Image (cartoon, rainbow over all chains, first blue to last red; front, side, top):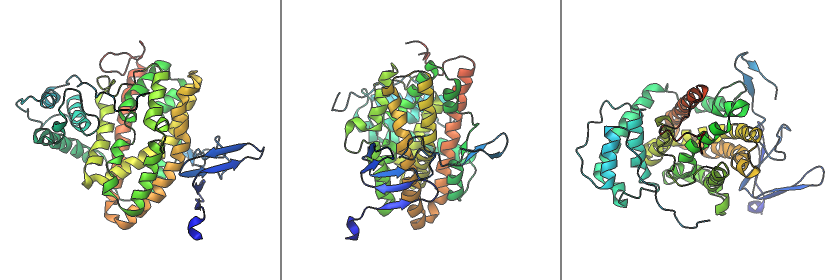
Length: 71
Length: 333
């Protein structure tokens, strides 16, 4: 049934949004859970709160030089 | 832990003729109401008077009969104060209707910006962090409440998405996880008083104005677009700002329990940002495109008032002075 499937949104610009509580297994076997209605999973690899998004995918600028700054 | 509504706060001290008259009306007196025209729109007198009128819709005051909430005398003066505040904001923020560009701009991280959270992360002192948290308690001890007023003014997908965010703010069914509760826990860790309204007398007009904007837009259906803009501004800028405050608190060797509020906001608001943009704003503007200028107004007015607060706090701290207006110096405990 389509209604029973979990909704997942690949934002493209940042995280992957997963609806419902999640239990995430990390590469080292540890498990992290989130009970939020929606969880944002890091897809850019820059988050310091992995597996969760911490908005580190955002564009960063240095105003005094007016140019982009690497993450 | 208390499970019932704690006692309402006491009325603050007046800051001029208008707030003095409003406080008298709240106490049940019938003073001659002063002319409101000419009161400085961002000044101490107007902002405190307006704050007290709005507070009747939240927790009220010990000395004020609950019936004052819908007392025409209060509503009449409140409307005049709102008129002055709103027209000053409309004059001071440039009009626009391009919500997409406005949101994109909020999503860019300015690494060399200099706001309060940047200062606290780099070299802020503990007494400055405590003052900041005390000022913020005016909003965070009722976190999400002003925005909840907008729920019945929305319908369909934007309503569902906004309620999803609010559900998270209120602890998703677990009172101990409500953000207002996490904030109070942090205040305790920092040695601050968690009584609702305890820092109202300490807070300058700039801090009151930020909360007043939320109440103004939340309580007027005609300003629901602006409320959504204000809500988006908080949710989009909070995650990186909270991260800077976590770093500030680690540097100042605050307890792990103290860090929890801002640490939770780094992750929660990374989700809320997505829900607000995709779930609230996109469908709202698709159904009611005429709200776009008000959404932009809400964003720009929030940013203007936040910048005024930041300037005020940094100006005091740069001189080594407390930003508390009642001399309840954050350096003394």
